[in-house]
Amino acid sequence: MTGSNTKSARTRAKILDAAALTFRLRGYAATTLKDIAEAADMQTGSLYYHFESKAKLMEEVLDKGIREVHAGVLKSQKELAADVSAEQRILSAVHAHLILLLKNGDYTSTNIRNFGQVPDEVHQHHIKLRKAYADLWRKILRQAQQEGALAADIDLALLRMLLMGALNWSVEWYQPDKTSIEAIAQQVCRMLFHGIGSSRPLKNASA
Amino acid sequence: MTGSNTKSARTRAKILDAAALTFRLRGYAATTLKDIAEAADMQTGSLYYHFESKAKLMEEVLDKGIREVHAGVLKSQKELAADVSAEQRILSAVHAHLILLLKNGDYTSTNIRNFGQVPDEVHQHHIKLRKAYADLWRKILRQAQQEGALAADIDLALLRMLLMGALNWSVEWYQPDKTSIEAIAQQVCRMLFHGIGSSRPLKNASA
DNA sequence: TCTGAAATCTAATTAGTGTTAGAAAAAATG
DNA sequence: CATTTTTTCTAACACTAATTAGATTTCAGA
Image (cartoon, rainbow over all chains, first blue to last red; front, side, top):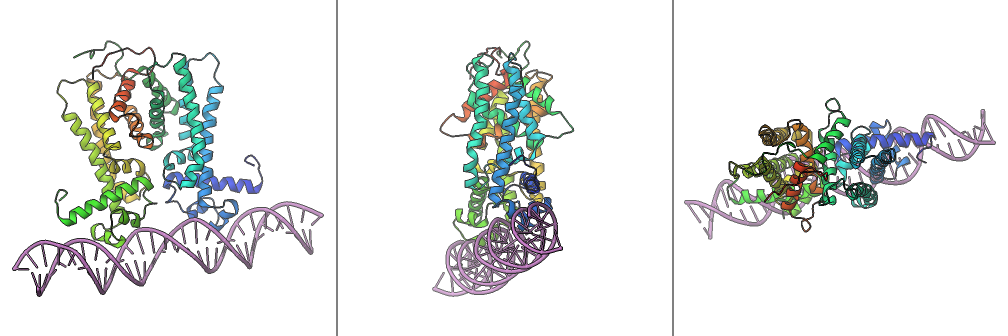
């Protein structure tokens, strides 16, 4: 279905794109089907030929968003050489996450900004996919720790949530013409692994 | 005015509290004045005796939220001894930010979750306060770097946004009965300053 | 207790929403 | 071309929201 190229499939995709864009900008409740229909160049009622409700539409946008990041990060891991360092693997995952969030954009960032303010049914349906994506990160971090690349006393659950927060928040401040996504990813990882303290002579060893 | 204790002022405060709570949970657009009125134990129309519109109500909630964190973090800095380390100062600021976000709660976290999906007028009005709060953090970080406690090549703007993201995102996952806010703050700062890599300098920070 | 102001309630207005049913048009099929 | 199917449009429906005006109640002070 997803890959087919019939006229119907193309219109469907156009509507989904319009919905993702509008939901991201205005949020779920503030977005009207009229907004989406306009962005997709059709009449409001016509949407119902392709989607059964506003909630279902959001559901598909959210699902596609998570699936996209999930697939992107997974791909980034599979493309790495087998002998690459844990730090490299994490850098690669961070980079992929940011790319999907900031560049491939609307679906994934609709996800970030609107999860939490969406009807309960949609929320419930979506939770499984979220959990699966979280599991991927759990796995990446756990492996790094087992290899000894992460200090043994790091709380992985906390680390993961802080890292996701730092990355996801970028949808609020990222400007394409300032720092490149790659540079951001590199700096995130450098700070993360080596800390921000001046690593040479620590003069604050005690006052 | 804010401190006065007339009946009118008390009802106003009650409405604001109800609004902050509801906005936080459901978002701006999905929150109805009826919801707020119910939470404040009165009829919908009565709200208009105290607030001229839904937008103005949100405006006050957002403003109060930022003012609260701003004041909290500022206070945390002023209460520190003059000779305390930069790391201590930042830990203190992080802790204060988290407390306001997770404990004193509704106003500040309404802010986090709803900025971005609020009418333009409200958005515009609110920007100045946001900038003032950001400036406070800029100052804290800049001073730390000038003292040499932060490596000279750290991009402070990036660091600040990543840190805010990591902290703010906690409204999405924090559970009061798991880890204490203080413990979270400490771990954040430890990871931040010394990194998560296993090669990080083992330093005994006495708390 | 009486009175005028403050505070709240009630009920209506207006506007906009998601959704649906059926007509119309476009595309596909023979 | 004729006919059937797919897709889109139009116009309505049922509902809910923010807001307002006027009636009603509460309440402080004389």
